[in-house]
Length: 110
Image 1 (cartoon, one colour):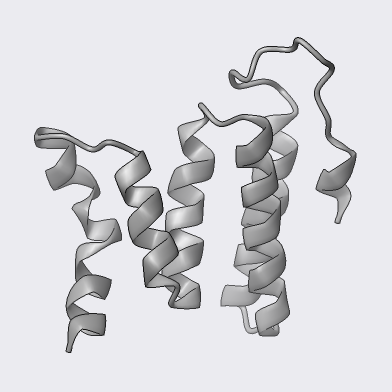
Image 2 (image 1 turned 60 degrees about the horizontal axis):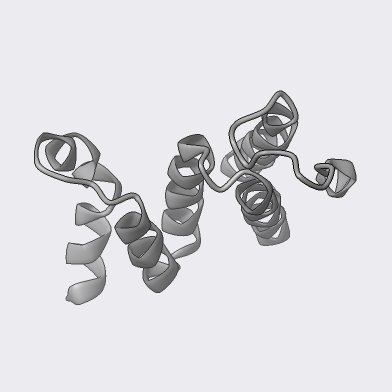
Protein backbone atom coordinates (compact mmCIF):
# COMPACT_ATOMS: atom_id res chain seq x y z
CA UNK A 1 0.00 0.00 0.00
CA UNK A 2 1.50 3.33 -1.08
CA UNK A 3 0.32 5.18 2.04
CA UNK A 4 2.90 3.45 4.22
CA UNK A 5 5.51 5.78 2.74
CA UNK A 6 3.75 8.84 4.13
CA UNK A 7 5.37 9.67 7.46
CA UNK A 8 5.79 12.69 9.66
CA UNK A 9 9.01 13.95 11.14
CA UNK A 10 9.46 13.98 14.89
CA UNK A 11 7.89 17.04 16.44
CA UNK A 12 5.64 17.64 13.43
CA UNK A 13 2.15 18.68 14.54
CA UNK A 14 -0.65 16.15 14.18
CA UNK A 15 -2.84 18.69 12.37
CA UNK A 16 -4.02 18.27 8.82
CA UNK A 17 -1.24 18.36 6.25
CA UNK A 18 -0.84 18.03 2.50
CA UNK A 19 0.17 14.38 2.83
CA UNK A 20 -3.28 13.59 4.25
CA UNK A 21 -4.73 14.05 0.79
CA UNK A 22 -2.67 11.12 -0.52
CA UNK A 23 -4.05 8.73 2.08
CA UNK A 24 -7.58 10.08 1.61
CA UNK A 25 -7.35 9.69 -2.15
CA UNK A 26 -5.99 6.15 -1.86
CA UNK A 27 -8.73 5.09 0.55
CA UNK A 28 -11.42 6.75 -1.56
CA UNK A 29 -10.21 5.12 -4.78
CA UNK A 30 -10.15 1.72 -3.09
CA UNK A 31 -13.66 2.32 -1.78
CA UNK A 32 -14.85 3.22 -5.27
CA UNK A 33 -13.24 0.06 -6.65
CA UNK A 34 -15.07 -2.00 -4.05
CA UNK A 35 -18.39 -0.35 -4.89
CA UNK A 36 -17.73 -1.09 -8.58
CA UNK A 37 -17.51 -4.78 -7.79
CA UNK A 38 -14.02 -5.53 -6.57
CA UNK A 39 -13.23 -8.18 -3.96
CA UNK A 40 -13.70 -7.62 -0.23
CA UNK A 41 -9.94 -7.36 0.28
CA UNK A 42 -10.11 -4.03 -1.56
CA UNK A 43 -12.53 -2.76 1.10
CA UNK A 44 -10.13 -3.96 3.80
CA UNK A 45 -7.28 -2.14 2.03
CA UNK A 46 -9.39 1.04 1.99
CA UNK A 47 -9.99 0.71 5.74
CA UNK A 48 -6.27 0.17 6.36
CA UNK A 49 -5.35 3.25 4.30
CA UNK A 50 -7.90 5.43 6.11
CA UNK A 51 -6.88 4.14 9.55
CA UNK A 52 -3.21 4.76 8.76
CA UNK A 53 -4.03 8.30 7.69
CA UNK A 54 -6.04 8.83 10.87
CA UNK A 55 -3.12 7.57 12.95
CA UNK A 56 -0.85 10.14 11.30
CA UNK A 57 -3.37 12.95 11.50
CA UNK A 58 -5.78 12.28 14.37
CA UNK A 59 -7.42 15.70 14.14
CA UNK A 60 -8.45 15.31 10.48
CA UNK A 61 -12.19 14.69 10.56
CA UNK A 62 -12.21 13.61 6.90
CA UNK A 63 -10.56 10.31 7.82
CA UNK A 64 -13.19 9.71 10.47
CA UNK A 65 -16.08 10.39 8.11
CA UNK A 66 -14.56 8.17 5.43
CA UNK A 67 -13.96 5.42 7.98
CA UNK A 68 -17.59 5.64 9.07
CA UNK A 69 -18.66 4.90 5.51
CA UNK A 70 -16.13 2.10 5.13
CA UNK A 71 -17.10 0.45 8.41
CA UNK A 72 -20.74 0.67 7.37
CA UNK A 73 -19.94 -1.09 4.10
CA UNK A 74 -17.98 -3.76 5.95
CA UNK A 75 -20.72 -4.29 8.52
CA UNK A 76 -18.37 -3.46 11.39
CA UNK A 77 -20.93 -1.87 13.69
CA UNK A 78 -18.77 -1.87 16.84
CA UNK A 79 -15.97 0.00 15.07
CA UNK A 80 -18.55 2.30 13.45
CA UNK A 81 -20.14 3.15 16.79
CA UNK A 82 -16.81 3.71 18.56
CA UNK A 83 -15.62 6.04 15.83
CA UNK A 84 -18.94 7.92 15.82
CA UNK A 85 -18.52 8.54 19.56
CA UNK A 86 -15.00 9.88 18.93
CA UNK A 87 -16.48 12.55 16.68
CA UNK A 88 -18.26 13.96 19.75
CA UNK A 89 -21.27 14.93 17.66
CA UNK A 90 -23.58 17.27 19.54
CA UNK A 91 -27.01 18.83 19.02
CA UNK A 92 -27.69 20.14 15.49
CA UNK A 93 -24.72 18.28 14.04
CA UNK A 94 -26.27 15.05 15.29
CA UNK A 95 -29.19 15.60 12.91
CA UNK A 96 -26.77 16.19 10.06
CA UNK A 97 -24.53 13.16 10.67
CA UNK A 98 -26.98 10.64 12.08
CA UNK A 99 -27.60 9.23 8.59
CA UNK A 100 -24.16 7.63 8.89
CA UNK A 101 -25.13 5.37 11.76
CA UNK A 102 -28.90 5.21 12.37
CA UNK A 103 -30.00 3.01 9.43
CA UNK A 104 -27.38 0.40 10.26
CA UNK A 105 -28.26 0.53 13.96
CA UNK A 106 -31.83 -0.37 13.16
CA UNK A 107 -30.82 -3.02 10.65
CA UNK A 108 -28.36 -4.77 12.96
CA UNK A 109 -30.64 -4.53 15.99
CA UNK A 110 -33.29 -6.66 14.34
